[in-house]
Length: 128
Image (cartoon, rainbow, N blue to C red; front, side, top):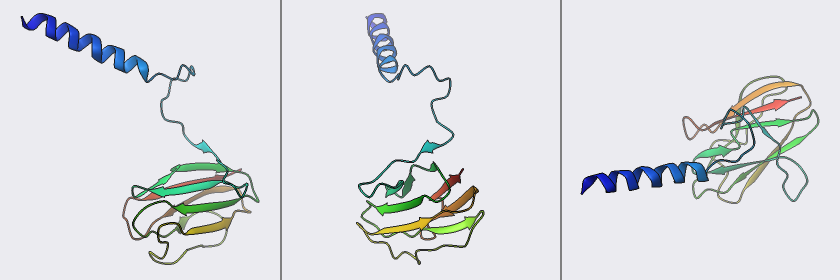
């Protein structure tokens, strides 16, 4: 009696795993970086949601202005850790739900930033 249940469960698991395939031909399921997505204002956008930056890594061009949007129910901030260009900070936990913050990146390189309120909430901007 148990054998048909095990086989059925295995078949369902294999079917479910196949449904998640994108068919894109890439051997990696997680990209190294995400191309900039645009907001209605025409520039790249990073969303703050579920105490994470999305995308976590963003690739942009020199001169692009990144906009962070707090889509969360808790307050966040955006503070530069390392990388080229001037230091930037939105403040300390001052971005409430719906608030935005913008920075223009004029120097090529990799910029790492964080939310100082939430340890582990980090992001990267790669400026080409």
